[in-house]
Length: 370
Ligand SMILES: *Cc1c(COP(=O)(O)O)cnc(C)c1O
View 1 (cartoon, rainbow, N blue to C red):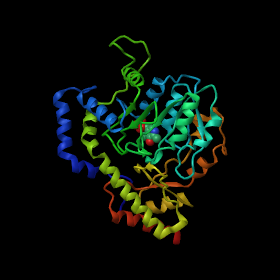
View 2: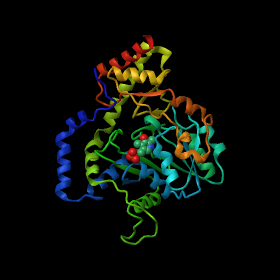
View 3: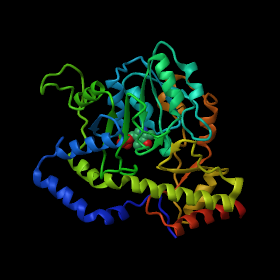
View 4: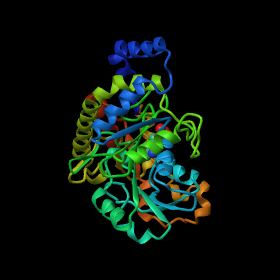
């Protein structure tokens, strides 16, 4: 049996007619930049997230970069974040010339540990950038308290967490701005790059709108330095077809996650650490990630057996060569470092079958008993 990490072809087959029509319609309209499809998606995703504004941009990395700029983060400012994330989180901070300040993670959720943030706050700190990793929100209450106490912006990296909730609130409701990615493999994926910033703050949203068109307002008059980063009309049309299905897909992901957890507990007991869904969190399982011993050997074995897996992420950002000048060394973030040697993500997508899941778990069990 072959079990891929992700199979996007099934989804396309299900939506084919509607999808092809939507694409045709854009081609016929000849409106390719910031047309009605982008507007509709911005409105729908803002409403879904219970915030006032959505701003479609070129990709999730630009969403972070633009949101930081719109919040007034400048060169030399410090932004507190996690090192256990995709590169773009800290890359966006560093591209502005600001300094990512890395805080260790909670060993159960793999998200930023709020109890370690306050000691890193100083007069240079401008914002906290929590990442909702694997589809589960960070522990937002204490983060919001700190932001209030020290008058800091919160910018959420919600690239992996569209639809996730925390104590009844949706991603985007906690912060100055939240950032989504529509990279094809994300829970709401385009057929190319795409991203969006959502915000409840009209001023921040307007700044984002201006930055994505070269800082032009009115057209051809430039008061701020922007660049070109817009959500493509074709991609927005594709996303408008997919978006109504998002919650149902998230539910299916949750079902698959629960299947994995039951099967793993039955067959492997304490040998693997299954995902922890913290109380009051609604995890949407962008990834189903376990912690194991002999991770690299397991991964190799599974590959030989036809099971794809991925490691998100093998090298924490504080130890990346590009950030060497920030002066971190091994041992600075012990939980992050330990976890980065143990995590492995299993195949996860809404159309995954129980037979496939049973096969994956059987092969994991086989590896540890052979
Ligand atoms: C995917 C991702 C991004 C970047 O999104 P792109 O659309 O690929 O630029 C940023 N942060 C996290 C945590 C991501 O998973």
